[in-house]
Length: 146
Image (cartoon, rainbow, N blue to C red):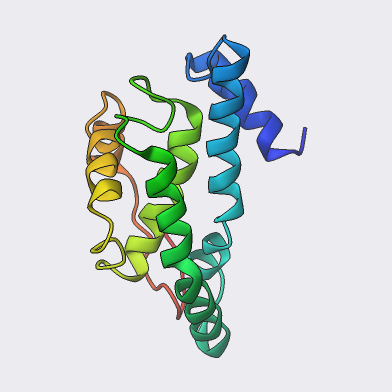
């Protein structure tokens, strides 16, 4: 199997992170896809170096505030993007924002709603432990590796 969305939904169902209600599942899928649309950050952090890195980073970060504002609007006052329960969509977006912060630790300074949401995700059981022990990417922009 080679489609990341299909694999992500499959794993989400196994982990209890995919809603059984069709409308709630649609909302979780929407958030997952928002994360996918922002995933251009992946090669910037993990592959690109030198001038290409600088160019792609500037392009991405130039459009980031608009994307972050869309996330703020979608999150609203909810605990997680789909309500009181975390879904796989939250993890899709968290991954992207975590990489954005790796490039610019102040990138969310104007988006306290997203900072608070990231804090809630980071404190989830299992997530907290993972974040404390995971390998960090080093050499971003020059020789990326974990």
